[in-house]
Image 1 (cartoon, one colour):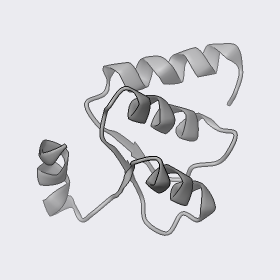
Image 2: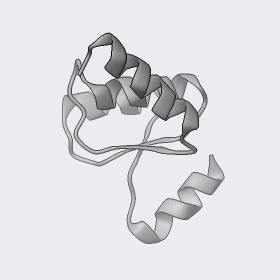
Image 3: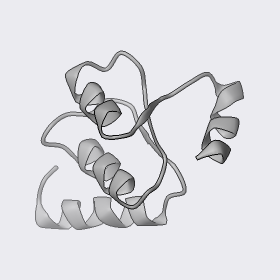
Image 4: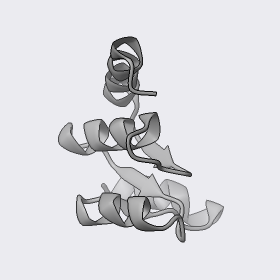
Length: 79
């Protein structure tokens, strides 16, 4: 969603989150916007591996791959 209210909502979500996980990013789309907002705020962003070109865009911008559940907490604490 790219309506003004959705864009504002995504920025708020990114601001309140300690960590953002992006599962299926589409561009334009809310998950990409939220991921980019979080990266701009210096928050850690994890992307589910193998999601294609949009996920690769977030990797290039600083996101990291989402690892197994036993490593998520440690990964979030490192950032």
